[in-house]
Amino acid sequence: MIELQQAGKTYRVDGRDIPALLPTDLRVERGEIFGLIGHSGAGKSTLLRLINRLEEPTGGRVVVDGEDVTALDAIGLRAFRRQVGMIFQHFNLLSSKTVAENIGLPLRFAGNTDKAGIARRVDALLARVGLEAHASKYPAQLSGGQKQRVGIARALATEPKILLCDEATSALDPQTTGQVLQLLADINRELGLTIVLITHEMDVIRRVCDRVAVMDGGTIVEQGNVGDVFLHPRHATTRRFVLEAEQVDENEQLEDFAHVGGRILRLTFRGEATYAPLLGRVARETGVDYSILAGRIDHIKDTPYGQLTIALIGGDIEAAQRRLGEAEVHLEVLRGEVSHGEGGAHG
Ligand SMILES: Nc1ncnc2c1ncn2[C@@H]1O[C@H](COP(=O)(O)OP(=O)(O)OP(=O)(O)O)[C@@H](O)[C@H]1O
Image (cartoon, rainbow, N blue to C red):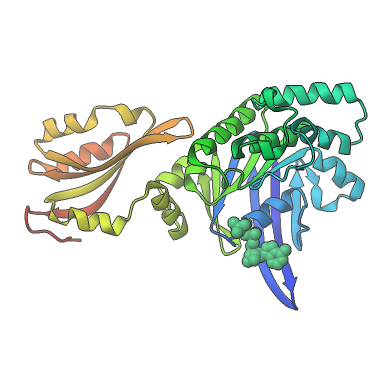
């Protein structure tokens, strides 16, 4: 388990203090995938790099599995860092070394001189990341996705218990991003590795993370289970990330609906409720008509969810809304009722 206890970092540049990370408390549980999301300069990298002390905190403590990392001397820190792998946006591979040599490097740095043992470990890692056929190639001969696989294999070489991912997919195209995220999720599940990743894309969080913290201005402004934060964002920054991920402009959408009569609701379904034939049943029972204005069905990690924007027209709208509210559905009224053709919003 990783704990930040009032951990913070202020840089001093040309006599001026730059508070990159305000004193922050955070807990990452063992075996989870924890995401940090924020815009450029929010303090994500600083927080991540405090965990393995690539940055020294200017205040507070970082505790990993009960050990105060901030108090370690140089020898203790070297041993601790073997338990923490890291991967980077631009892979940070040595261009003069082959794939196999890059992957074996952390073992050599750790003082391992058993060449046959290293070769066996490197072979197993190559197989783990699906690069058996590329062992003797050089980084320049690989695609971005393959380079990141080398980065992941190298990070796993010393059998770490924590993997820190600094924008690991930001340099990759969407399809390759999906494959690398899947690999991270598999490693997390199979090895029980704790993963902390930083990103500026909500989609990355949605696909692999269990929990998320949203950062803004050097502090955490919202955190929780990804399902809760993604489907019901409370902070304005979180909301913007979610809307960006869904490519939705809320104001534009409401303008588009101006000519639609009735009451406009947004329904959010999670888990099995996503596939339940609820709308038709409620419409039949209450005599309302509905039209679907916008919708999306997708997954948050392995859990399906659906979001539907509908207009309810005619019939017993109050009863319909009550029935929907009683089901396993989260319901928001986006716009009150207007009669057809009237347009514009009532409160
Ligand atoms: N070595 C440094 N010296 C001085 N200021 C720094 C240093 N590193 C980061 N900062 C400043 O600290 C703040 C937070 O930076 P940080 O890199 O942690 O943010 P970030 O959210 O990771 O952004 P990005 O996504 O651009 O990497 C920024 O204002 C940045 O300019």
